[in-house]
Amino acid sequence: MEIFETGDGSHSIFSDQFGVSYHSKHGAVQETQHVFINAALRMKATIQNKISILGIGFGTGLNALMTCLEAQKRNLQIDYVAVEAYPISLETAQSLNYGEVLPDPKANDLFMKIHECKWETPIVINENFTITKVEKRFEDLAYKDQFDIIYFDAFAPNSQPELWTKEFLSIMYNSLLPAGILTTYCAKGQVKRNMKAVGFLVEKLPGPPGKREMTRACRQAIE
Ligand SMILES: C[S@@+](CC[C@H](N)C(=O)[O-])C[C@H]1O[C@@H](n2cnc3c(N)ncnc32)[C@H](O)[C@@H]1O
Image (cartoon, rainbow, N blue to C red):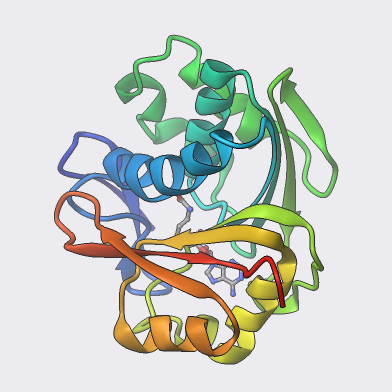
């Protein structure tokens, strides 16, 4: 595992185990902002204030941190479940520079609070954000009709083909509430076809800097 600087100055990690990085080399913060905060959270926040989120891949904790900051900014009530099978060490988390590159002066304290809190139990980080970190393999998840949003941030299909199949995507579909949405940086044709096959309404959106497209998929409200 190696920390490196991405194009926007924020850190990411290269995973030796999977042979890929945790974020786009063009910018980790930019990617999270675009794919998860703007395309998913801000969309839901236009219609509701209380939002439940499943984060597929806690990893560096960047998605959780930026969601917490957005929740504070917009006075949202977020219940965030972050799943991760291979948690990074606290020492690695302390070396990541998100607290310095994000403009909020509380970013670093919140980041460490999110990393230091206990797993497998809901922890109130502040009045806008509660997190439950779950140490589990994605393949073993069995949620039903529970989340408004899924941040689908697994490694790409070339590294983890099993997580982009119809079988796994239907587990994601069933984890969402009706009209729940899933966003991902991935825009591969076969993945979008698999999403449609399990029932998602699939939208192609412009991607974050360095990437032409991304995908937003909505669980159909009427089935
Ligand atoms: C693309 S990274 C993104 C992580 C995170 N969203 C972030 O911002 O750092 C994918 C994450 O999924 C985790 N992961 C990979 N395979 C997994 C599996 N089968 N079950 C659970 N977690 C897994 C990796 O350890 C890594 O943290």
